[in-house]
Image 1 (cartoon, one colour):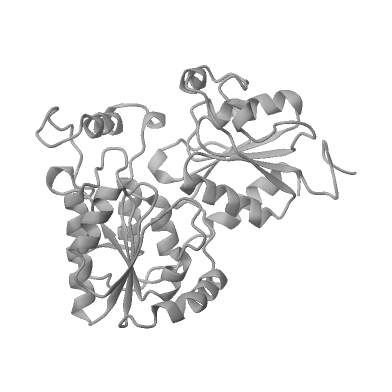
Image 2: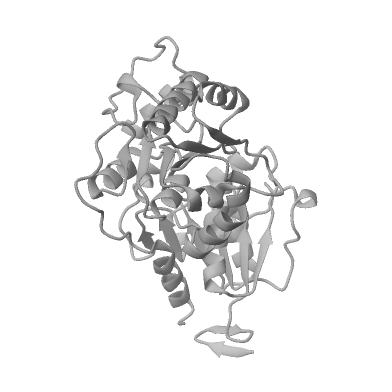
Length: 366
């Protein structure tokens, strides 16, 4: 064992646990950070009980909200570092600190508990967290997209997609998120606009849905596409996912603007990125969001509630994706689908993953 500051680390490397989130985008970030650290890591799957949300409000160090029989074992040897996301994981992380008082807790996103209870919070602009010594503000979420991975996946998938006319446009499809509702009508509009763009230069589409898309929207999207197309319907634990191959093969990328994770992955390719607004009119992502009239025909009460939170509640109750959209468009890293291209090439993006890893290593004096 090697002593480093107040820590006794095996081979000088902190034992690391990932507390898995219910959201795939969160888990991509956790894996990317742990992978870049290169320390011994275990991923702990957590299943929660129905009353977990109530316990979360109390911010207690407890496992009472966890279904232990359906979760990964939480037993010694205890970790030196926990990397987590998703507010259900907070109580588990705080409980682990009662087992190892030297435990360092890194949270990705926006936590429910007081920020001072975490050693590091890695966040992005839509959460609107304050400036603080233990808060790292990145422009976009970290991810596992690298040039090497894109090249390898593109080479592997190229023979299967060789029949499609070039250039190809990747279409990354998210789903309903907070105040924004991805209806079958919005999906059909995406299909028409993406097809028109592909037809403008005789190309084709590589389309992938995601966990939030929904069957009705998938059906409407696929039915509306008239351009030559490869259409992948997302499935949990699919044996072979073409997502990274699509990013590697595409000449440009359309991404629905509800997914900050997919926007980050698209922008990292340094290819033209087009944001698709899943809403229209006063509810559009590009529109200034005043409080809408409650009960307006065709609007979900949930969406209205989220808009009220964005405009009037403390930041931890909501997130405002418009902040990210505006920064990406203003910097030239993306534009809205149908708008003219930027006048000049954008400056290189910051490396949020390297910044995050540097701050975590500093927690251990490394």
